[in-house]
Image: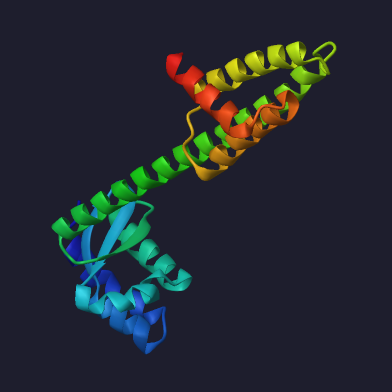
Length: 202
C-alpha cells in the first residue's frame, strides 16, 4: 500500500480546491492521516484543534476526502475523524467504541427485560381476574380462601420466574397483590407477606 502520509500530501491540494471556507481549510491543514483499517480512512486532529472536526464531517468535504484518497489507494473508503493523530489515539478511540457498544447492549437487555417483566405481570394481573371469575360460589368465604391460596401460589411463582428489576415491574407486582386483596378480602400487606414467604420457600 502506498505511504498514507504521502498520499494525503498529494491529494490535499485537490481537496482544497473543491471546498471553501476558512474553517474547512484550517481543518484540512490540521488533519493528519492515521491509518486505513478495512475500508475506513482514519483522519486525526490534534486535541487542541478538535473543534475543527465538524468541518471535515461536512458532506461535501467528507465526499472529496473519501474520493481523492480512495482513488489513490484503489479502494472505496469511509472517513472517520478522531481526536489525536497517532495509532495509539485510534486504539483509544476503538476502545471507547467498544465500551459504547457494551453499554448500549446492556441498556437494550435491560429495556427488553423491563418490557418482558411488564408483560408478564400484566398477564398475571389478567389471569387473577379470570381465575376469580371462574371460582364457583365466590361469595362464600371458603371459596374465596381457595382462590386466595391459588392466587398467592401463582404470584409467588411469577415472582421467582420474573424478579423485580425496575419501578414499572414493582408497580405491576403491587397491582397483582392489590387484586388478590380486593377479591379475597385479605389486607394487601398480609397478601404481600404470604406471596414473599411462598416465593422464598419455592
